[in-house]
Image 1: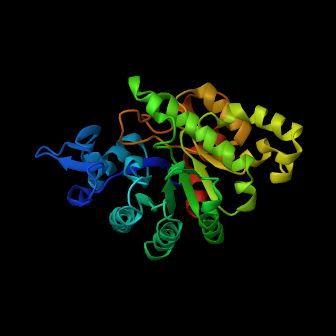
Image 2: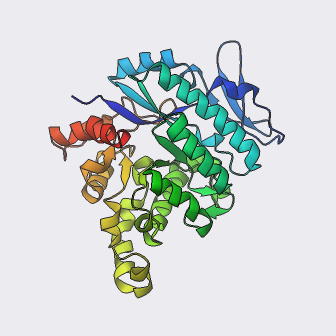
Image 3: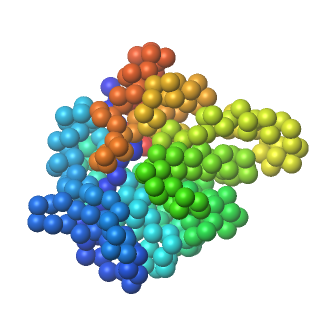
Length: 329
């Protein structure tokens, strides 16, 4: 039987505590004597963290309690740092990627890893992508939906997508910041509405502008069940059918292209997950919990088990087999 896998978890190395960055707005980690930490920007608290973010033994204990055999470690999106000098971001990405690779090397039976890249500089991003997947042996990378004022569909990223395509890279797309997010700071709306909206818009853009079609070997995985994408697909199909210029850009119906992508199951609702599975296919879904954050699904895969639309084989695929196949390339 394939291992039970939690594809969507986040890791932050304690090495970030001593990282020197020239900008006071850089996301900084401080940890007190009790092991409780905080990420701050410009001295303002952004996120509370604790030993679960960096302590592999603690994570393994939690995994055992939750029935998870393997976690995929990805960077905290708050540390993407695309708005800063690319050389500084690249230096931090190397430090963080090295730390994730060290954890994976020590316990490859319990962890796989995804690295970060300085996406605001395409050449530097390609170089770190190569290092992550070859030298460090990580499974792929995690990126945001937007970098340095540009959407992922911007032609400036074509060279990056071409390199991902040549490598058959696994690319986990996770929102962190985007234009308009300043409207969503009240009542945690960035987490509640911004993230799923941005995930859906990003996926729709990559489909409709032909990026997915032009770079078919990139293994895109979208966080939060692809956000709003499953509900956008009928309208995307209608636009594709109505407008010749869209069909010239991408010859395949958007709903068909969507079934070539991957998604985690972090929807918080069995009915939402049923719709996602209906439109993406259960073979394209992987359990993700968002461990160790406050909004994590506990236990990982709870919504998969709660959804009556799935038989035992589909549940097994989403909890184990799909992610195992994805990680193995």
